[in-house]
Image (cartoon, rainbow, N blue to C red; front, side, top):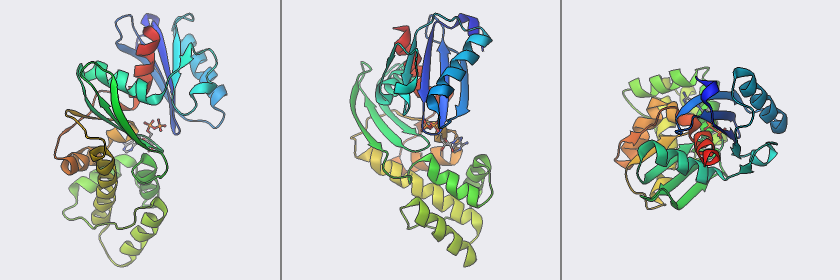
Length: 257
Ligand code: ADP
């Protein structure tokens, strides 16, 4: 963390987490802060900026905002869609085209990036919690496991129980009845991860994806999701450093110009 060297800021006001990233003159990520999203996003954006300035980020650096609450960030030079920001961040990370799969708290998106960095096409699921971080959160909470533990349990399970419900709420009741029927919890946990991986893989296949495949968003931190999604797609998922910061990073690069 090197706040004094920040030359541009990117704010990603996501549905679940709000991220502020600072880049230096060369576009390297040198400072960041991440907080759970507060319902009063405008105030939160201001608080994060105050935090940045208090940490030593110069006050005159340009800011670009993205994400769900991007239009609420006062002081932003402009607001840019998440698709553009994610693509910009990913292109900078791999230095080439490919397919970015971003799994956030309440949506998942697939962005096909051309070899010149432009967005070729994209698909988004923001209508249904299944296939997003919320799906895993609900199930892990119900089983009183942290998300880290949830992933470990899925990876060490020797068997997998298919979860037939495609909706988060119904999958939760299906999970409870499977437990009541004596199904071992690890088999169910692996089945839940498989269900998410299958939903996201269907979204990916629908976009005529091109390799390499990158995975970003908060859910990219789950080793089980990385592995099972890779299995579903028949490709290794590349997870860049700080995957949850990809959108904010792209916004900061756009602000840098
Ligand atoms: P958004 O931009 O929509 O707010 P993020 O990309 O910030 O979303 O990701 C937030 C999601 O990431 C939340 O649903 C959270 O539960 C999930 N998440 C964070 N850490 C992990 C983890 N270790 N394993 C699985 N999911 C995680």
